[in-house]
Image (cartoon, rainbow, N blue to C red; front, side):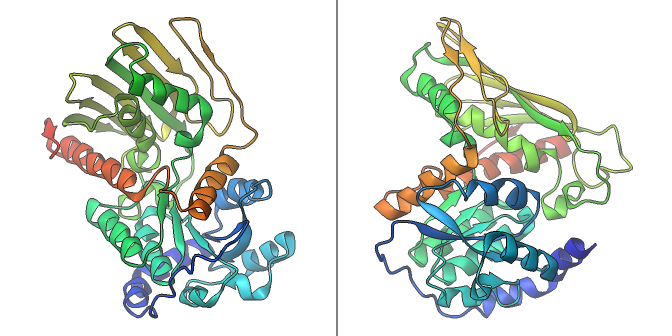
Length: 361
């Protein structure tokens, strides 16, 4: 319940904290060999994946944490030898502006908190990495982009698959039309979540299958085609209404693209699914699984095996993003990429609610 109380507390104090943030301390462009990363939110993803990955990175390292739990703060300090000055809670977070050890704030919170902490980090003069989905709405995404732009810091969204080598090969097939134009895509991402009374079952907090897992197949259709969808038809289903009364347990959606390509996609928190199949004019290619934390593999109609393994996906993602900042190059996955997905997610939710095909502006 401690985490739940901490999250709910921010619903009350968040707006005031953003409005009262100090004047930004802009990034100075100082030369560093490695960037200091502060993780905001110490849930499963930070604890089990990001923090261990940061022990393997070449261009960045774990420099600080932000948590509402004194117990977690003490445990992390001991485990990762973090100095007291680099440990923050959600109330004193804005003081991070005065800390030269921290160059990047990585927002790893429930989606309804992404905008607040991205804006506050940007105003503190820190670069921002934000987990997917980017935010709750297109308007929130745009506010995050604007805040980072006006404070002269970069914004990158945590789409780790775009850093993964087999996925990058798939992207190149579409871009170069290696197998001709894309005609049909089938993609799905899901798992069985047996938890109850969790924020992922609450739409207002960014819960539901579409927000949590649906952005994987959605983003895949966009990077495979290199196009933005122009229309969607979607439906939501649940087999556990006692748990998923506020958010979608399963969502099916079909996307139409300007080239004529179609995509049939599924996402669920009630069943496991993990594949990406692409049918093109001159063959096919696939990844299965396509969004697991390891073991991404696939093949093509020409007998090419897609099975390049990397030691750690999160390490690759964070090193890519850190190196981009150090070299002054644009992020591989900028905020605009996250916004484009959320624009489609909004249309998917509308289609499921209204029961009709929605044209995407």
